[in-house]
Length: 167
Image 1 (spheres, rainbow, N blue to C red):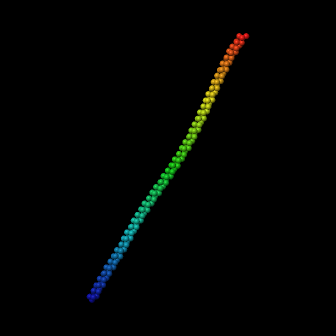
Image 2 (cartoon, helix red, strand yellow):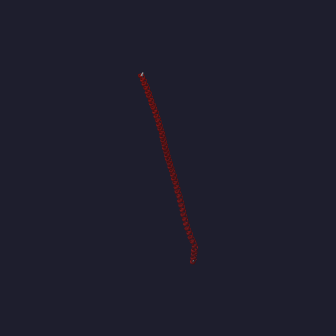
Image 3 (cartoon, rainbow, N blue to C red):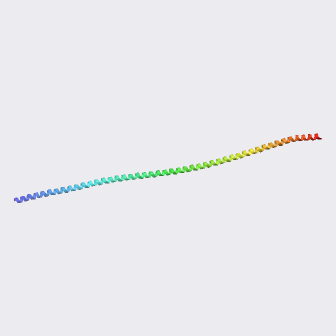
């Protein structure tokens, strides 16, 4: 009977030990599952943070790329404007050069016209002086002729007087 009680007691203790062992194993399994879940959550959080950092990095790179594109477009626009200004200045310079050439040609033509007018005036004046000189000479010749003509009657009268006296 004692052996049967001891055996029953040992079986009871063995059953308790088995239950304790089973609980310990269940606790370990539960703890392992909780650790796996915690690690999964931590990994999800880490991945989410990494994704958020990548999104931020992508946004920053996109913003940098946009700014660079804007700067390139601005530089190209400034270059085009500068080229347009240079072209406009070249056209203005060419126009001014052409206007200056026209003005110089007009001035040369005006100078030539004035020179021709002056020459014509000088020739006219020389011709007038020559005519005046010829007129003066004609007047002198007329005066001499008149003097001769006036003297001729005196000489004729004197000659006639001399002839009468001689007769």
